[in-house]
Amino acid sequence: MPLFFKRLMWIGGLMSGTAIAVHEVFAQYGIQPDDWWLLIERYLIGGGAGIVFACKFTQTYGKDGQPDEEKKDKK
Image (cartoon, rainbow, N blue to C red; front, side, top):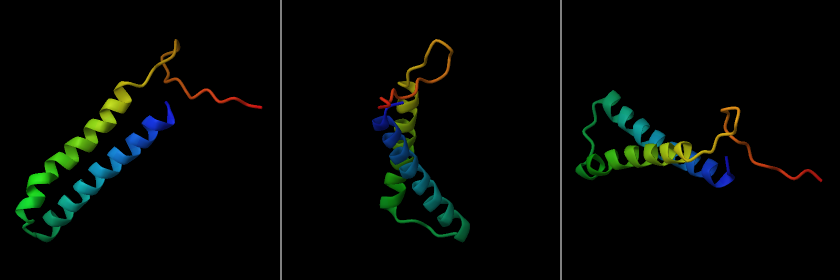
């Protein structure tokens, strides 16, 4: 998988993971979050998950059914 997609997956996972962690902290301590957080929370989680899905979905596979690795020139 190209480095660009790996970085996008990392960013998307971090974005979703952080939003889920904040949601769990609010739920654990019984804190009522502000309205702006309730508005953007679903988009942070869904957007990050969508980025990761798109990166994995566009990944190319070789003849053996395994994901193709980056071709590195060894000199």
